[in-house]
Length: 267
Image (cartoon, rainbow, N blue to C red; front, side):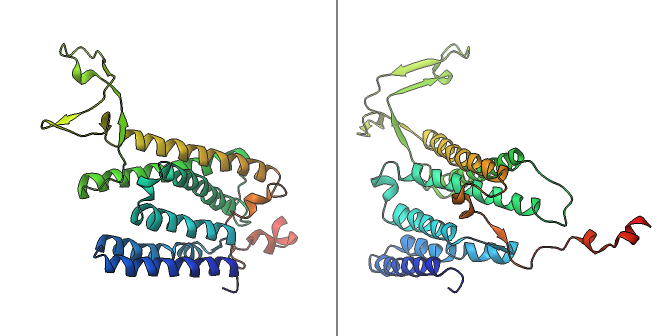
């Protein structure tokens, strides 16, 4: 609270909302929703765990964004069904994920690059590429997680999409790898019963590719900012400073070459 009063106040407010939601889920006998509330409370500790594990400082702005993101994803998205009610809610969150993950990846490499005990210097372009690749890797692993949840636990984390045309070689009776198009699909029958969706139900693929694309947009956007930030040695793009992890004071390993006298060096 002393270090980041604004982040502490936001966290306290969101925790109160989560507790209220937790009580409400119990009253509704929705134990899955109750579990998600408990999970949300645990996820709020992520910034603190990162601080202690990596000995870094997290800017208040980044902490606040992370807190709101967790709340928007778990409480609003899952418990209050924003992922279903608001069509672009999932894409918005994945875009933010790509942006923030790139910021974290860029920060971690920058911390190493600025460590006086390590004898190497990375170019701004390399730092930007590492931040971008870190973000995309996080995005891919998340899609693996969603697929595993849907396959093993029969959830629907990879939200389905309604399409009106399919193109598949599986429909080619000649088995010659020829693409067969089925267009103008208005309805699908399963066991003689209409789904009533007005088209064909795509199982997760469009959602996955859309998530990865917006993750790409977020990662590329921050990486571009990070490139110019690093090129100016931190004098430009003040926004990046508010999202950058920095070494905790006193945690940097001293440069041992500074302790060697000129006489010892010559010897």
